[in-house]
Length: 302
Image (cartoon, rainbow, N blue to C red):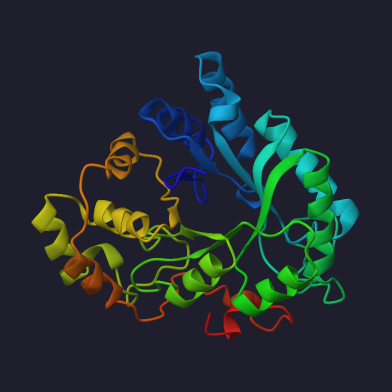
């Protein structure tokens, strides 16, 4: 799995197709997708165009995710089939269980009652969804499986029963939430950690005026000036130095290219130490809507 990829969360219809095409032309070979982003059809159009220009399917790492309405064995398969159809491919390189908790199962991605309250199915155990994902590996429909937004205790439950071990854990990760304990846990158990929102997700829908702006952190800005790089490039390089896979999202040609231009410098140990010292266990995406669910992951420290 290439350490650097393109994230597609929040990429709007009409923009993501061009973004993926430009990323692949720039040199990216890792595209992170999810059914719930509701843009996999456009990603598929970009892939079709890229494959028509000589890029080989086997050279592109494609990640997909099981959404919360697809946690039963039957629904896991339904979700994968739709993702494969939308992306226009025969297999995924990586399939992740997006969250450990389940909604009421069915075709509605966000099932709600008459009052607009989300409908959960607390009887569904993510371990059963995992077993369904293992079957997909055995059938060759996905090459690797992992999880997203799981804590280490939830990962241990999967490790205890797994016949196909999780190979990736994808979580929010940046210098304000460096996930050092989870990273060490993942490495101990042979897993790669992937960082989403590595730049602080400045375009997230929940942003408020009093929230910190990661890209403007004074210590980060000073380090970026030292290397003649942007704060975003330093944040991406920070993850690469730690062996963390990183998937910054952008739909801008300039930023897509800038985010990829991070292999011509290395951060000094003193700067890595400074960046690690910025940790404040701050989540830009705390997912508070789901905090009362039985399997909510962020009640644990890591």
